Length: 132
Ligand SMILES: [Zn+2]
Image (cartoon, rainbow, N blue to C red; front, side, top):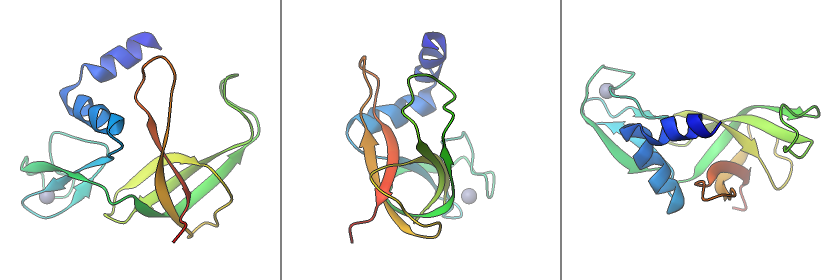
């Protein structure tokens, strides 16, 4: 696992993503040619193949596209049950994440939160019920 983390941090695309996570910002790429947003970062636009990509900070809102409550964790350190979800961000990209802090119906509104991790690792983006 340590090698995987090291490899991920060595990628210039993901380095910026994780640095932003430490500031509490979820970065997306926005295409200057067609306006498409994407996450996670890639070297070119998935919609039009342009390399004219700029970082933008996600607004933090989204909608639950799909979810599954997991009762048999894939790793013993994971507290069960936990909820894996696909969340469609307001900007368009769909992110694989966890739902925390309460039940949200599929199709329901959620808001970005950050889950702290030990050992100096950057926090990871999770989503909870939208208080608004
Ligand atoms: Zn594009």
